[in-house]
Image (tube, rainbow, N blue to C red):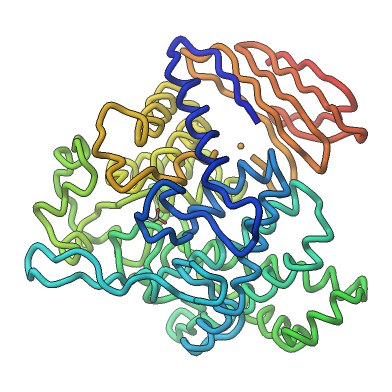
Length: 463
Ligand code: IFM
């Protein structure tokens, strides 16, 4: 699993190994009744609960290097599906609505209801995430699909994966709200990944990911039905697929997605772009996260164009093939200056997108900042123990392995292992060449800088 970095700054290698070490020690590999706590193994921050941090930020590392561990983590989500169904039912929906925070397998939703005191009223602030931060349901489906695309593990899909993909799609179908005026389905009253905006309608990340989740459910329903497999019959009986999925299909084309405006900016939600703008410089230069709450309460922050963490930018990273570079750049440039990176999940996503957009200097700067969250000179950043998710990190685009390295100036080479469909690979990247060795017994296909390659043993590509 070692990622070797030859960098002018020796700290980079240390930081990567620090992350690898924590990823390995904090993950319960032995028992799929446990997930990863958002603060790792070292302490009790977030009560050891599992969030979307696992599926979108940590799991890719395991999917590409230790697929059996990734499988165990996904089985944990399968083991909690009962609680997800209960949550859906309690809220008047169908299917599986995953808890925002998850603990023991049949606990269901465990997000605390009350948090820190509001600086204006002195009263405890309600934590809405457990009620309305719902994108986790699509995030889990996305991770299942990503694991399947990378590993081709049909066995897991038959035991657990298809059921998660189908039942999460069914949830979203029942969650949609018809908007008579627009003649479209909306998703109202949610918290998206940007937790500084509560009770918003049509959060871009939530809507796009929900639509992706529905599309995936429809796709796998058709595929399984066509094969007339025993899995189909079992799931059809359990989830009433022949009724639910045609219903979902009818709604699918009418799901509203916020589209880029004239400046190519996708509105983060129905009201974000109309909110007031303030000078954020002191908060952008803060030494400790959350400094905005010394001046504003959460409900005041709700009315300002300021974001806690990557939200539209996170969407551009996950569904990157759906947006062109103009849109990616416009959104990055619009939202990053308004983002305080008050969540440790934010810097790594921005670093990857900055690199995609060709700004290697910025990408390296953000990578450095991200790697100092738990390992930097400011000891207070880890008061509540490490930030598990900022130690995750590699890409598969729509089922295809893609390697598009862009080394920042101070990094001379990177070497890392990967497992693709049970084939072990070694990737070595330096300033001008990429060497890929396939130790497996099957040739693998992949894309490097938009060129298709098939690798049986070894390939050297000059770039
Ligand atoms: O899941 C995250 C969330 O995105 C931001 N607040 C902290 C959670 C746990 O890390």
